[in-house]
Length: 113
Length: 111
Image (cartoon, rainbow over all chains, first blue to last red; front, side, top):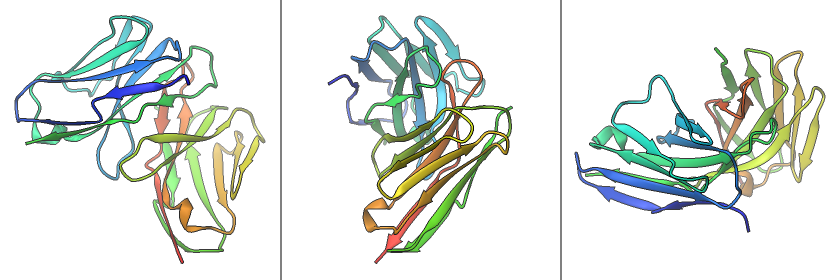
């Protein structure tokens, strides 16, 4: 089945220790998104790629970076995690055609100790 | 700037009752999505509404879109416990498939 896969599903890191979350997709979608979702809040878009074209949201902290080496994979790097970065991180994909919505992966729950 | 407002934000209802969740948005769009999220899980797509007057139904849930009023509704009929979850509406920006989410409605169905 075509899908969006995120690894790991649970990640524990220490304060200030860099961490990388990964996302892969078998849907062959052009667009990939990274969201941060804190408890009882809506998902907050961090950035997205149209193919290799990177688009950063204005309020995304510099501590968050992303890489998309090819169509299938996208990575979220948190350079120096703080306690406030503990959250669920959701990857989503969509095709370029309008009206198709976004397909979400299962998420990675990040804990910062 | 596109803003999406949902109400209520929290809904506690008895099994067997009906209720409606409202989603208002601030600028022109004819693409609106409803998602469900269970605690600790990701978002599951429920409905895709792509035109004025669109109505979709799945089981006890029915969603509609009025683009003139910039309003979508998610109607729950004869609620059951399994419907307890958080429901988000999201509106497509005019370019691409970038979504703006409402704050979410936490639904608790009590027996």
